[in-house]
Image (cartoon, rainbow, N blue to C red; front, top):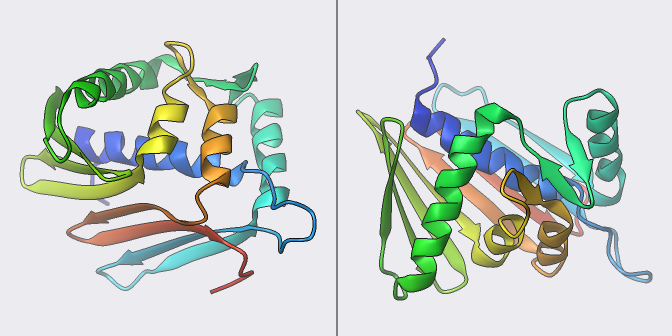
Length: 192
């Protein structure tokens, strides 16, 4: 089993946070087909996986996580544990720098031993993480990142993230490493 590097942990944490927000996104308006969250994981070793969950039903998972002490949600904000605070601070610093940067102009930050480059291209953030001989790339909607980071210093604003996600059906997150790729999207198709 491979040991996770800081780059992998940071990118995985960001991916999981966006996925958690996606999981709790509200269902479509009455009269429309219900929304589904899809996660597809492809590994170079052939151990692929995925899941297809109704968005409306998955909100209960966050409630269960809170009941089990795995998450603390107050006033629509997910309070993060101490181990995630340095990564959250780094994300907020990059977001502030992106606000001052021009379209497509990359912002660079160091997090532990990982070099992180982020650029805003249209309505999406392109993220590149390098840590030694490992690298990963990802794309996230800028509106979702902005909404999630509008919370308190030690929290992600889940309610704001959900509002941003509900307006963005289609591909939400894509992450690619040398040995795997992960795709997360929302649509009205039960399984793919």
